[in-house]
Length: 96
Image 1 (cartoon, rainbow, N blue to C red):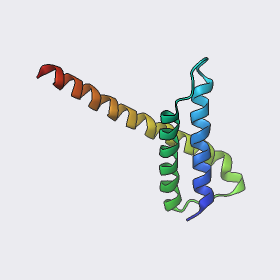
Image 2 (spheres, one colour; image 1 turned 180 degrees about the vertical axis):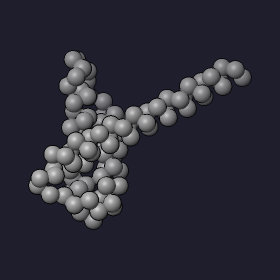
Image 3 (cartoon, rainbow, N blue to C red; image 1 turned 60 degrees about the horizontal axis):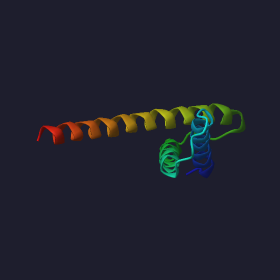
């Protein structure tokens, strides 16, 4: 397992998380949201690491963008699933 692959994807997740706070004026950092993003980043890093894609100097920029994109996409999917489950629970609770 290439530890640098994991490091780069965690850095990518951190870049994404910090970028989210930079776009909003006055928003205070939420440690839970930050930890969730970092966890998704670590999981993406593990997945990419196990695929065996090599880390090279010339590929670092492309890898950073790829990892950020993967972290964003997976985080959005997870949020969509959680929000739909919560809405479904709320709807079924109000019917009962």
